[in-house]
Length: 145
Image 1: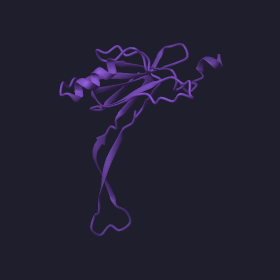
Image 2: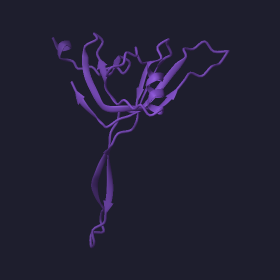
Image 3: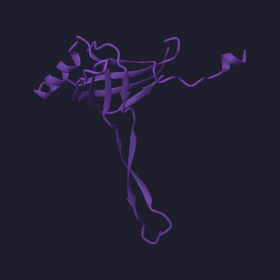
Image 4: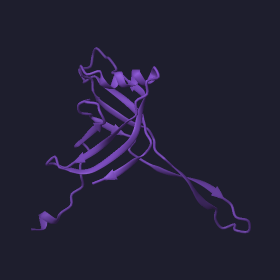
């Protein structure tokens, strides 16, 4: 009975990525899922004990999605189209699931565009998986779930 009430932490290796209108397969790594409130110092005359912190704007760093390279060129094509001026903004989600595959957290990012594509590093003495990554700038995200 007590085990049913237990809330274990979720593991970070069970997740999915959804990208609006793109079938891209599974990703092995996501970074940049963060937000920060930017502040500005305001010094008030006669107050010498502290400096006021005034909130300015919310910053969202780039998201970086990394996956094993496959025959699918979807991410490469999206980046190439963007770099040649055909800009298609896409929204998407980073979805964290539990051990049973049930969705627990979802971060929905808005209006992303690719700004960097990185291909695999090749080494003849290494048998690791070839990876590609894509860096996305976006207009913020919200949390569901």
